Structure formats: C-alpha cells, structure tokens
Image (tube, rainbow, N blue to C red; front, side, top):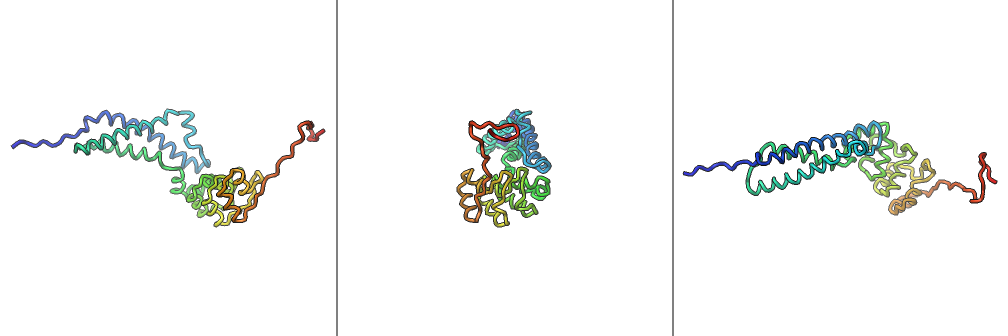
Length: 243
C-alpha cells in the first residue's frame, strides 16, 4: 500500500513574509501607541490635541509604518486565500503574525470619539472637560456630548474663547447636537466673547439646517457691533482723536 504523506506546511517558504511583517508591526505599534496616548491621557491632561502633530514634525517617517503594514497585510491576505484554496496549512507563526498585524492595523481606524466615549468618566473629570465638550459639539459627536452632560458638565459651559457647545454646534451645522443641547436647557441666545449668538454664528457659516432649527426654537440673531472706521482721509492721532 502506498504511504500517504501529510500535506506539508508552507510556513518555511513564507519566512521572508513573516520577517518583513514583524518590523512593520513593531513600528506601527509604536505609532499606534503614541497616537492613542495623545487621544487619551494627554488629551485628559491638556485638552483637545492636534493628534500626531509632534510626530509629523519630528519623526515623519513613522507614518510610513502603517503604509508598510497595510501593504504587508494585503500580501498576507492573498497568501492566506491561496493557501485555503490549495488546502495547505499555514504555520502557527504566520497565524500569530497575521493576527497581530490585523490588530495593530485596526487601531488606526479607531475614531478619537471612541476613546472619549469609552472613558467618558475620566474625560469629564478633566480640567479641560468644557473645552472637550465644545470641540465635540463642533465635530457633531452627539454621543460624547451627551456623556459630558450626563457626568455633570454644565450645558452652557464655555471653552477658552467663550464659546458654548451651542455656538460650536451651530458653526458645525450639527442639528442633532443642537437638539440635544436644547433639550438639556441650553441658552440659545448666549453671547460669546466676540458678541455673537449661536444663530449669528450659523448665519455667518451659512449652515442652513442649523439656522432653521435655531430660528424654530426662538433663537435671536445677536451680532457683535461692527467697529466704526474713520474715513480714508482722516488722520488718527496718538491720543485716539481724529482730525
């Protein structure tokens, strides 16, 4: 009787693929860890961040790691499909490397809103919680804005420049956020540091949906006074008088 030999694995033949994948996963992991730290701990301590700004200006080559990992992952998927069709088993090292690559690559697709939603208690205790809520209102993150409100952040809290979440939502044209804020008792006629109301901000940004919503809920178009400029042929003296 002819001896039936087991189908050999092709793990050894893919050693070059695994060797390329490991450094790509390593550097991509470093970048993902840094970005996640900026979106969580650093944001809690210092407020809204331009995530990745430091790396982009000091270590820009680090952003090549996700591209390299994505390229490797694409090849690995092709190899995986081909192996399944041929019924050739892959080595455990390939599977572990493939799983690690998928996990790290997936981290780059996690939106910043997720971290605030997942750890809203910690973000709400931040000294910059008002800034974060107003920023999220501008971005249209209704879920996280609700989370801040549920954790005690005042609905009319102001960020560093005096804008409320209603101002930010109006500028972004985010009606869902405006609806949430209105239901929580937001002052739709609050005046920011520049003397404008949310409705005026929406008008300046031509956010038609926000304009319609605010108008339907009794918001007023409060505009900051325009400075009166002297005529072109008027000379202004040092003491402020004109002649």
